[in-house]
Image (tube, rainbow, N blue to C red; front, side, top):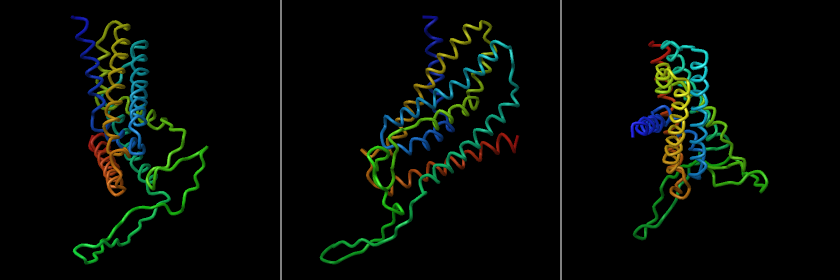
Length: 246
C-alpha cells in the first residue's frame, strides 16, 4: 500500500497537468481541425508524448550530469510557450479563412401566408474543390482533410510545452530524488498520466467540432474563431507576465 499510493499520486499529477489552461487552449486549436473524435484523441496522445519527451530528456540530463536549471530560466520557457500559442492561433485562423469568402444573402420563407426574408451569412470556398480519391476528401465547406492525418503539429506543440507550467515543477522535484532509478521511474509514471490526461482532454474538446454532433456551419465558425482569439489573448498575457513584466 505504501508503494501504491505514490504511484497513484504521480499518475494523478500527470493527468491533471494536462488540464492546465495553456495546454487546453493549444489542444483546442489543434483539434478544431478534426471532425472525428478519435483523430483528436490521437492529437492529444501525440501532444502528451511530445510534452513527456522534453521533460524526460531534461530530467535525464539533470540526473546523469547533475545539471541544475535556474528559476529565472523558466520564465523564458513560459514566454516561449506564450509566443507559440500566438503563432498557433494565427496559423489556425489563416488555415481556416484561406480560400474562403464571406457570403451574405437573404432567405425567404412563408409565415402566416406572408413571405419573410432573413439575412444569412456564411463562409464558402472561393472555388469548387476538385476531389480525388487518392489525395483528399471533402466534408463540406469547413473541413477538407488529407488522408494522411499527420500529428506532427501536436507533437511539436507538446515539445515546446515540456518545461512550462507545472512541468518545471516536475524537474525541480526530481532534483530532490537521490536515487537516479527512482527519478526515471517517477518521470515515466508522470509522463504516462500526462499522455492519458491530454488524450481525454483532446477527446472532450473535439466534441463540439464533431460532424456527428454539430451540422451548423455558423456555430463551427464561431467556435473556431473563439478558441483562436482566446489562444491569442492568453499567449499575449503569458509573454507579458514572463518576458515584459518580469
